[in-house]
Length: 326
Image 1 (cartoon, rainbow, N blue to C red):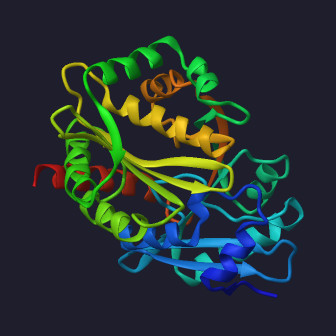
Image 2 (cartoon, rainbow, N blue to C red):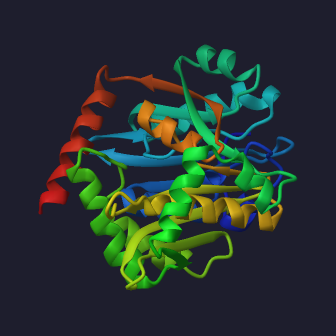
């Protein structure tokens, strides 16, 4: 049987059977991502497998061609048992060909022994990546606090001593302050890959009332928002997806939001807080001070147009910088 498109209820029911699923495989999150990135999400499945193979096809069109899975967030790839992975990849590539995709990317968190051989056999070029997560399974808040490194505890204390507090984010926080913070980040040479205003508006519209998301703001003593974070929940993990901050007099307000997310996950009885990504050594060092440990991510990329991925990365950086200046 070939892949068929399924509705949200069918997708979400099957998602629960896959231990490798993350918040970035959720139907609502993929629909949000497609809308924010100007793409289209197709929820494809192989229903004759047990559990059903799930193929998240997020297509982004560029003129006469498109990409599949070329997105600014990790872990987007087929969800399949090891024995079904070769067939899942064939179905994914068939879907990509029908969409005239010149680049297909898959990223797998904590890959199994069969993952790399299956990707290579399907023609993917592989490279190793990583993410960082904070283990909280079996820990209360005191144990999590003790697991922070000294500089992590110092930064959280400094933020509190400066009068910063955490509250639920408001519409203005997410739709006005967070885009401004993201634009400032881009102006400093950082990048997220997300169109700031469109993404944050969609995030508020679709996630503000969701029990599977947590939108928080750190505010100064005078009530000024200084950091905003959007977290996504799935299963036993919280994933910190999108956030930015304004530094104030050497104070790191994001440290307070990181600690708040860890404390909340411990109170919920979750296993981990995924800090999502490790793009630079500086970011790795920053996240480690919260007790984060590295987890492997295997990325497979198959290109029909050499250099297309590099061209798209350059285009994304240029677009982000123009948006920050505008």
